[in-house]
Image (cartoon, rainbow, N blue to C red; front, top):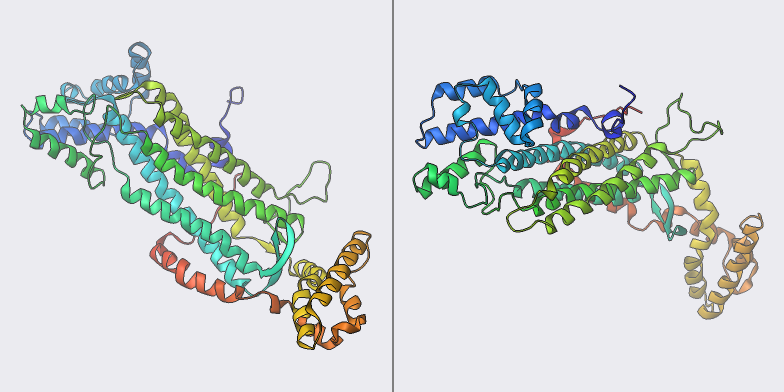
Length: 475
């Protein structure tokens, strides 16, 4: 249907894998698997639940009767209760024990944690591939001198590869954040209506050890070492902030990279991939706009700003819980994951196909190199007996004059001015040697090799099974 709003994250940007991760099918299947796990654990700990009931529940774990659930929700006004009733309609034998002792947050919160954990795994795989693409790029161009920029003004030279390591390092920090978050992410477990586990204590006739064992069993059934130690009705919403902050970090890194490429594209030094049939402008047919990187910055801005939501939500929860978190979280959590997924899809695509215009880079270096070389010229002239302060002033005056002349469209003749000044006592041959760009890149090449070998490759080796992804963009 095209007569109602369509979410661009779904229609244009996010991958099928991430869309499936936050799909109603996966969400409500997880609810049912959590109810099955609860029934199995309760049976194992001595409650009167039969194998027949559990098998009936398993039969319909993936076969969700959505229409029934929608009808039940119309009059219950409660999504969890609606799905309990819908599941019970399919499983009449198991109906009496579905959701036994649990509160809505049992399925809702535990499912959200599982979905976020699985979403992080999807993002991690894509992040590794971006890092790998940029690592290959950095090594390839580790020796290519380019203008460094501070304040977007020409500064000392760096290399194209060295600049790429700055992008990679940001992403490595994000990868470490994902790893830490995965390692420390715990589910809500089985805590009851206000977190006291009173209902389960009643079920097990006051046996606290069985209640504690039940909590641990549920966590382990879904791949966690344990559950959070305490909760109200819900897990502390700070956990959402904890997870979504990682997504903000990825968006920060992607925004920085995309902005850099956009600026370099304006200089015609480095460009994103551009298809043969791609249209840059509906009016100006010659244009090659950096639209992929522009989209990255747009989506990154969405993630960064949306990341404020979980902090406000967590801070506004009253006592054991309030429901003002619900509608907000339904939007914020999936959409931040979908948008970050879209960012990384574009990032993979762009980083695999960056176009480096070496001649333009060389031209820009040569235009600025006379200014950059003045410090070396000054030191050499002083070695030959010149007065450092006097020569420094001469260079300052000549540099200002030359800059004004360049603004008038004239060529950079700073070197000619210095050669004509007898106080410098330097030959043309000596200055030409000083104008070799590689003399001004410092340890750039070595830094690239050291960084990739020591910092990046251990992660690429660790996650070698993740490598080999490509990203074909929908638009």
